[in-house]
Image 1: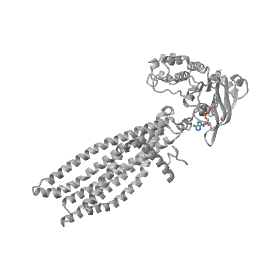
Image 2: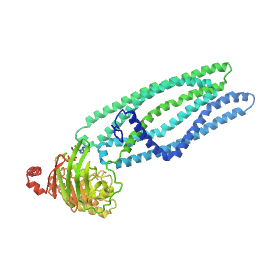
Image 3: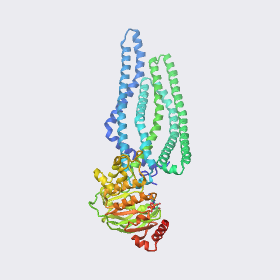
Image 4: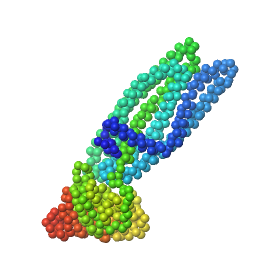
Length: 601
Ligand SMILES: Nc1ncnc2c1ncn2[C@@H]1O[C@H](COP(=O)(O)OP(=O)(O)OP(=O)(O)O)[C@@H](O)[C@H]1O
């Protein structure tokens, strides 16, 4: 199984080759993010190194003060003591200044990386084809944009400086200790053995637990987002109790795994303190004997003790860093997977010009399958002359929406070609395609903003008069005038709420303004009341005039305004003719029509 793009994202285990592939992909992404920031990065590293060096100088200066400064003071010589005091203050000040410098620089880097990454993820996911969005849920997209980016932000904001500073500090400290007093250095080296074992133990255990904790928190987000996006269904079907139970189980799982993580720290941190204190004690005892026999100065012993103690200080931070690093690395892996996805409906490299489409649509030997194992539309041909109004009918799952999506090029056929004015849709510039073919979906989605903005989406440079003219044409003007702020009413604010039928009319006005050669309409829910239905029906008639139209008709009243009816069954067109012909015949449509007529009396 491949791990390209978002495939295999939910898997817990990867083969070695797959891990390498994923790691390489996220490193490439990281490299491309950091590349423009190289000068700032170098400055940051230099500032961190210098500040660590300045801090590490402290104990050596103290040793000099005690062993040279104090004896000189007794002999009335103030200079060495004054010098060590001044050196201590100056290194302290320089260290503090450099800390301020690198905090500013690293903040600048982390902001730049995050903004870049956030923008890339947004623009890229927006560009990906419908096929991607139909399978990759919005919960997962939101996870990428929120918790994953947060994990990376946390690492960049604090983790990286912790790591670089901690490591630098440990290396410098060890080197200074060895230079100053090598026997104490040997004690430290011996302490590294249990330290290595403890760290390895922590690393192995924490890797699994941190991964489980991330999976658990991602599940929480997905569950939350899916409940909230489907809140109508949740409340309508009284799913709250079940959701509460499911959410409760997820929270419990998350808590358990976090408790285990804390348990790890409960062993690691005291273990660390034990090793550190033992090393300090050993240094004191060993050094004490050497001070007594005169082979070691007191000041050097004090410095050696300070160095040994300080060596262990950053270790707890490094363990925390490891946690942050793992979260950020896995977040980056997932994000790089999303960014690796290619639109399954790619833009043509050299688009063909299409100015005024007449609206003739043809399917030439088209076959279509969403997944390789199941053909949804077996091979077929279909010719729709310009200006014809087609009603697509058929039972649920027959393939009507699929056929419509092929005309709108939300998907490309698996075989054959869909053409507009004899041009393959795959060769058209997306702008030309969207201008020529417009699909009005069932939900008639309205964006936040005014009614006028929502209508103007059909033609972004439209004047207000054109917006009003479009609304009048489809019969939406009257109800819009009646809204609290007329055309300026915000459709998503309280009071600005519009009914399903009104929403449909707004989307008709939008399509009317766009004035496409081909209009595809996934017809409204049949829940409209009679006056609304009549209103929508009138709007529809105006909208359909002078263009090719394909209507997925759920109401037989809509079929009456069609020139031609296509009846679909199991992905095939089983009947094709004018409404009168089909009603007069003895096929499926005639039966459907008879049943509908009977239901009216
Ligand atoms: N994104 C998808 N991935 C895989 N299969 C799909 C997808 N969308 C639809 N299908 C399948 O394709 C077949 C045709 O579905 P389609 O939505 O075109 O039917 P329809 O006639 O429009 O139905 P309805 O009237 O209920 O909307 C169905 O069997 C459905 O399960």
